[in-house]
Length: 216
Image (cartoon, rainbow, N blue to C red; front, side, top):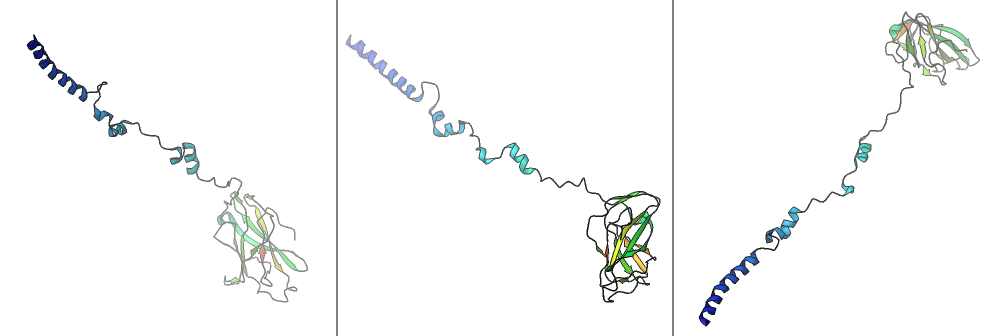
């Protein structure tokens, strides 16, 4: 009987050891130790969302990329008349004051219709076409404005220079011709009707074009 008990104990011991080894290699939930290592936890963890401060929202991005609005030019009037829209220019005496002489600069249109606005370029020429003195400066004020030039219509601008008496006789030679640039144009018009103008004291000015002659 003792021999039988000893035999059973000998058989049970190896089996118990084998089971102990198996339990140490396996977890109770079936996962290996490698799955629970720090490296495995790091790899399987979901990616953390970036901080809101790292990237602006879509609304902010849109505002940042939008360019500043340009100033509106819807109310701006530009001349579309060219020098070819005029048949000629001339200067007509328009009175005087004690200190100044006035002239009516006339630009006559042809058979087309266009819009014009601004100051004409104006200067005096000798018989050879050489400019006398400086070109006219722009007279102050807001007279004039946009004008629709109709077929055959004459536009006006006022030319002014000091009287010979107040200039102590410091006057240029009389002009044989006038050279006129319609507003916003680079092709000049030449006229031979000068009304005997000559600039005194180096002063010559012109106003904006208008539909009617300016009072002197």
